[in-house]
Length: 611
Image 1 (cartoon, rainbow, N blue to C red):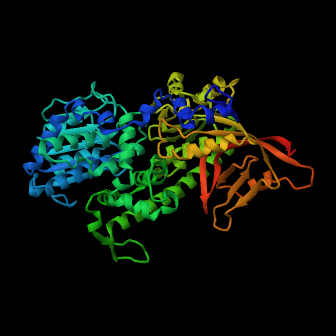
Image 2 (cartoon, rainbow, N blue to C red; image 1 turned 90 degrees about the vertical axis):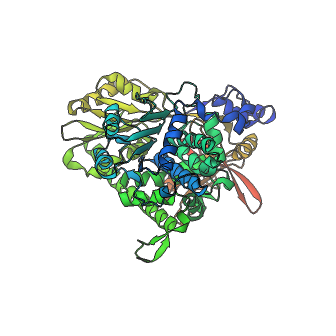
Image 3 (tube, helix red, strand yellow; image 1 turned 180 degrees about the horizontal axis):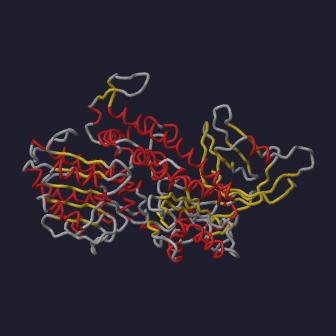
């Protein structure tokens, strides 16, 4: 592995004496004014909702339909941003109804015939699902269709408008359709020139629409679901360098603002990892994956239960338990939903393991590990259809293992292949990998982010794309490079102060604000510095103690890794010498604070001596 210090200074003393470590990190992230970064208020961070094109028309259209008790449908988009967007809308309508300003017949109880939500059976989006279009047209026949965090084509809009259905789209994805201001109203921050924040996801656009409805109804209830707004923004990987997005996330995740029943259940049930408070990292790793599991493999009933658990009145409802030990017993809806989403996550993990086993076998049989980019193409007879939804997840895991771009594609009926790609961000040669796939001319499409995207190709071009990248990277260094904010010798005590400072800012890191990395060089590993703990609790953890007192931790280790690093003590003073890269953390136990690095990667360079 390669280590690259982001800042130009090599003098660690300068960090602790002349510069605040957090200022160094933020400057490294492209933040030009550190004081302004922390000066976030409602007044200077949040943009006026009226800067979003068509938003007042949309709010008035929604209110008109609600007050006239028309049939209203909401299309729930199949991801965390979609679920939170729909929940924010429904919670707003219910709070408004309680204020006496919305028609009584529009009370939301989840089964009212004049107010319906629609769910995708598979992980599809917007009006692209033919079954959804049929349900809207033939079953629900709403007077108003609200589409948060998604959209459709002009042809789909025209077909629904022709049936007398008004449509309000509250979205953040790039789209061509802008609406007509009458029976098709589109509110989209990407299309709104005056709205500067392009890193506001669907739930943010919904929240801004609720703020306008507040104005029109003389209410002050839009912020009641700010916790859901924050979760949706983080789960949809919005850039936290945007002042508005960062402020909404920080406000929504404040402990006193986390009031949603399901989020409170997550805090309670997973206290070991969440520890009573939320921040972007905890949402990204402990909550968003639960939503994502339901969207990938959950049934319509499980998705409905999740949405109901996100509503404000969820704590008031009991449902029959599906747990084998309490089958049929009435239990809180929120608890049952949490059981279902955690079970879905477990099912997903098991299926993921099966798919990874299948792919490992393909890699071994076909010798794919020698390629610069690994492309696994799976024929129609060799996989279960449910594996398709796991391609991106498995690609992410395997690119970490193989440290190179990983593509998994499945064969379709017409002989083409489509699937997902994930590329490492630690290797400079693979920067902008989606664009590199486009430039090859061998893909039908490559759509998404630069390092995480969907991809399709013809059967003939699978091997052609493999050959293309092998030739392209034949003489290119593809060794992982870690861009570190601080590089220090393992004997230098100054880094302990840096770790202490950085540990106090764990709540600000997220997309666009990567958590700082620290590299310790000349770490001696061997007798007295190496330990394997937590085996009896089923959590084997590697501990390496550096000379300066920093304890380097690697979770999910094991006896084999420990034995490979454990030199027998023979009095010679020989140790393995290594460089360790990790993230800052403080472990506090019985009043003692120990600086730690959570190991991201390490490399053993040879033998060193403790003298």
